[in-house]
Length: 160
Image 1 (cartoon, rainbow, N blue to C red):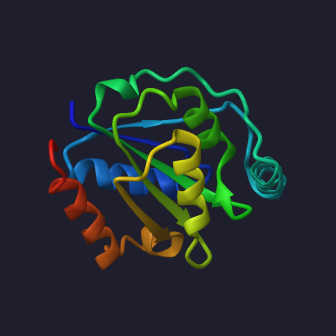
Image 2 (cartoon, rainbow, N blue to C red; image 1 turned 180 degrees about the horizontal axis):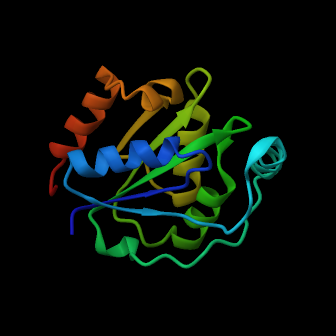
């Protein structure tokens, strides 16, 4: 199998981006679930606190094995300037199973290379592809040149 997009999405924005990438690159996708209620302002602050503390939290079992894919692209919202706690938990649980890793993040603010560096540190590999996406563009359905570049990079990757 070629590519797998694994993502966590509190508000649906990262999910929308992951599903778009998966469709455009003819790949599979799977959502990380943690069973927590993260709705509303209290969920927002709870999520930010976990991310800031770099907490590892329980996540539901995943169906797809990342070791069966040439590349696993991780999608995460940016919480408190870093990756979400469910994504961190998934990476820690599976870090020895990745052949190649890609990363995209969704955010309301400006660029954040810190999250990509954190993913590299956890998995112990340099990212094969990465991009940052503005949540507003995703919600509006805007396909930016950044998205097209990311997809082109995936499609021209050796072994893809």
